[in-house]
Length: 579
Image 1 (cartoon, one colour):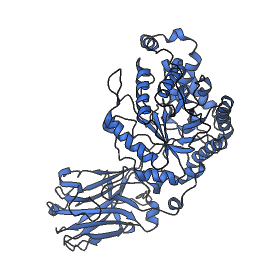
Image 2 (tube, rainbow, N blue to C red):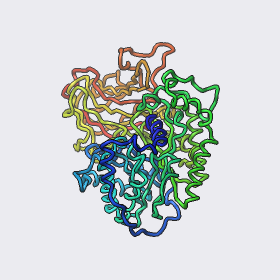
Image 3 (cartoon, rainbow, N blue to C red):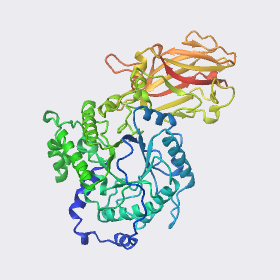
Image 4 (cartoon, rainbow, N blue to C red):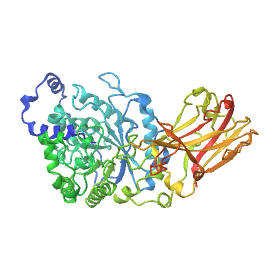
């Protein structure tokens, strides 16, 4: 992903590269003095004649963080199985060096981090997928004086750790950027390649130009290594692909930019952009930049460079934020995908999923294949498996545990000691069930679904909330309610149904208090409005938008204020929405 600061600085650094006197400062001089001597050419295996993978995806926000923040179960084997079903054969896995290394000069990577990385690599490659371990860390704007030593040491450790492994490649640096690297990256990359190659003559090494833009590849020297492949990233035109980007103070205010260019739909330039000449240039050049012909020209230039120099090239990142109009977004993906495929350039799309509402994800919401963006996949030329295209899939919220997109929260008011999501006491199926000891009548079992899930197709198909429950307690009512989340909505509405174990006629369903497991099924269509977050309003006014089944944010099970339920216990298992 690119920021506007990155775009502007990249242009400025290119223009100023020859004015080296203006770049002199103490940290820079220290870094230059620390450069190692030129290394001899190491032995290398058989030359690559083609890149051994074709289409794939970046799985970020997993290993590109400190070891303590890595959840090894965030991405599961079924995720990789589904990528294979989509015809993908490679995963680009961003990883973090600088947060997981020990002291100089060894810069030893954290063993716990590496153990989890091993498990991920094994899970990916065992399914026939390639994995590109992408060094995706280090502050590049203030490149440290020992940065080259740190990168080299970490890359060598990975090369030795995975030496001889099939389907593992190593990318040396994601989007190298900043003052020092603008002057020294090509030579530095050459030294790192030689150091890594000395560890493994057969490893596929991925190299990039400064900034990883499509034009910067042409500035690289000859590395004389026939098992190096070259990567670039493609996000042009950035006014389209990054409009409303929340991490950039200039792009966050942009919206409504079409692709291809359409004069009747171009928004007026903002006051802030009129004050900056380069921002004005980006705006005024959008007519030429936002065309299929410009995309073809830029990608063809990369393909021609590779052919002329006998190089193998692939696109490691490309994407457009979901803030543009869907039809425009799919037109952009089709243009990029068609031209990449035509030029025989393999790619890994950015990205698998993200926890932000504004994202590049291949999903339309929560990381579930019910919400796979089929239009994006079709635009990229992906053949959609029948099981993904045949209709809405059941959505499991709990079965022993939950998926990463569904977070099990503690009882809001009762505390986690009264709520056990991993109870081993006679589960209905599998190894675990939920034990809920009611402590606070306004607390409950709480599943937060993020990003929100679109279950509108399930609703339209007559789906039901289905779960297993058992108890020996007599309680008046337990309420099950869904709550929506829609960005900017004045009210987040709730839809509810109830069960009872004491014969209360107001309940939607009865549960026998015999201590045995019973299956409860409640059609979603039976659920009724039960207020909203915020002002306590019970139901929408006439003409007001009501509950949105395409944006379900959580499910909560609660006594809803019934004080007589305190001290009673109920068990749940296998909670799902199914047809």
